[in-house]
Amino acid sequence: MSEFGLMYYNARWYDPALGRFVQADTIVPQPGDVRGWDRYAYVENNPLRYADPSGHWMCGDEYDPGCAENSNEYNRYRAATNKDIARQDYLFSLIFSGSNNGTWTNADWDYYYTNRDEIWGGQLKWRNNLEDPSGLAGFSIHVQRLSLHYSLEDKTLFVQDFGLFWGGIPYNAYWTKSAVQVVHGPVLPHFYEPNDGMDSRYIDSINGDESQAHHYAGLFFLGYFAGSGIAGMVNFGRDGMNLAILDLQLNIGDVYLGAVAASDGMHFALTGQPGDLSTMISDLSNYQGFIEYGAQYRPR
Image (tube, rainbow, N blue to C red; front, side, top):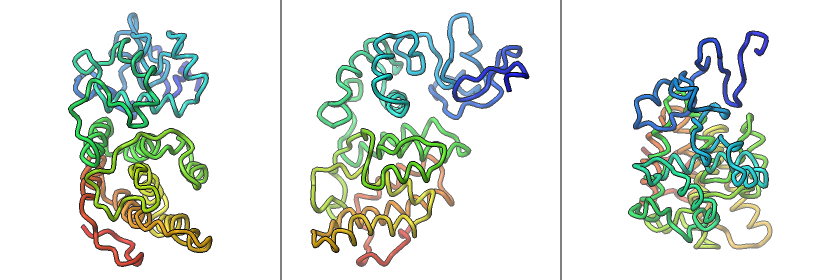
């Protein structure tokens, strides 16, 4: 494409002659700002002040995600991790508010990177959203906030970001590669959501303190891409059959929750839109009445 005078900015192509991207942004970073909905605009049509090397995020602040070349501290952090961690940080900034009327500041990013492990591990709440409810209610609200940044055409990208943030599923061009990487569990940090508010029959039967948000996200991801049948077999094989063969305790909580998540993922692929997922998560407050493992489809 460079022979046509276009410039590649990691996520999409930019035409310097027009001063606009030739592809729509797949994310609306600031949905409350009407300028953000011009998804072909380059840095809100103000290239003298801003840049956009990532193709997703306008740079004018040294701690902006996507502006790593302007921040030695952020460069060192990202270099020590990988692009998936960098995207998780970006998604976090979409879900949680900055201190400047919702916009993130230098101080917000500094605080975030200083306390990232504690924030993601559930030991510390984000300081600008202390009023967020805990447990299932908080999980649902956080997913709802993220969904506001995607259109119906971006549904698959939304599922990938959901899996990355809550399931620790790597971001790949092919979902099969991502699924293989996490067959034995998350390979990346995943955001911790407490289990309170979730029906007790969906709680991990072996480790009750483990956040079930990551198990739901993983099987939802697989149900969306592979269908509930394959996702269900993977779920039962990992948390049911394999444990039984090894004469270990059946993790019935994971089996039941995985069955619901797999069904939800397929249902979402067929008829859902981004805003529907938070309702599906809220529904986990009530057990769906599965008898053993026979039901493949969640009642609606």
